[in-house]
Length: 492
Image 1 (cartoon, rainbow, N blue to C red):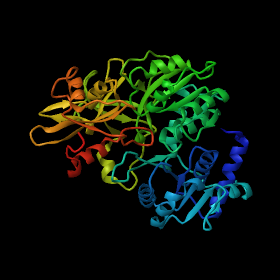
Image 2 (cartoon, rainbow, N blue to C red; image 1 turned 90 degrees about the vertical axis):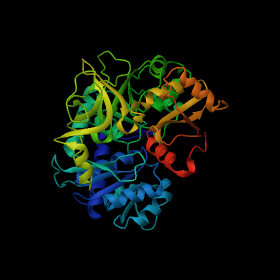
Image 3 (cartoon, helix red, strand yellow; image 1 turned 30 degrees about the vertical axis):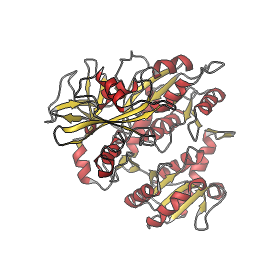
């Protein structure tokens, strides 16, 4: 691993993992115990993660962007016995720990250690290595990844040891990561793709992981150059910002591949990024419960505009109608996934598991189709389809038109209740700095490209859109706000 001026080789990394495992065992953590990780992209995230797996304990990664109420809910629901955190983020955590009575063990990284907590660095430096640990079987629970998205219920996807291995091997082999590669870890490691591809996949291949604790476009370019990075993974918003920068001078020569995950790239971003960074940008698709990659553009196959690629090795896809009948190529329906890296179940949520997981097939919640060559085209989240007067409207169609207006920076379209039509089309719009446009102007702009029934009737100008840690717009929050009496057409 590389972090700033620090270099951690595999031998030293392995020693640190075994020492921390020994310390955790001495503190009472054993097989099956849940322990939370609340750390940014630092070497200690990786050390702590594998120390817990070495013990047969269960890792519960927490988003460093979560608020106190979210942290408390996950700690309580998961029944974590301990937590490993960073002193720079203790403020929202302390209130959460007061509500999570079972979480009594706290390890802290940093200089200022609370009196009741243990110093993580001291434990790693002073503890003897754990030479014999309980053997974890392939079907043993390894990680619980909680679903981001602002839902009121806590959905924790359980992954076995075997699922982690499947995700790691598939990722490293399909993206041709080898011992000679340098993988940039700018995607948060608490994110499922940060774990599966960036961390597990790179370590499985014996590659070098370059840890970047935050995304700043200029800092990423510096890291790409200084550390001769060959592969990176990110979300569409990251690549959009990188594409907007001036071309690196002198040009970058080592970056070969980049993977975009978590939504569609805006028009022109892919071509601009590839031109400026001289790297191949691969679009992909997946979700937490799948471990998370489902499809990706292939390194050695042609890309198709609008497609998110072909299934990962070992992954099967089906497109079914609402009655569960298998659809033919190019027919839109519900996307079902079967994968060796799929979750086992939702933690302590048997009813929700039964709704989504049937005979090892998982309902993604997305609507799309497979073409004749098995390329996947994702059209919409099922819950995001707007039904107006009996017609179905895909919100992404309306969003693409809105984003074509020169004054619009971001747009999110949702369906809101309407007594006459069932649902009406509402657009939440973020304007570019210094730009102005009226509601009527935007509606006219949409009607010039879309049928009247698809064009938004309600437009709300907002300063920001609610987003997940990886930049996905949380439309469930927008719908909930639209249903509240206080918001009724008040900001048009």
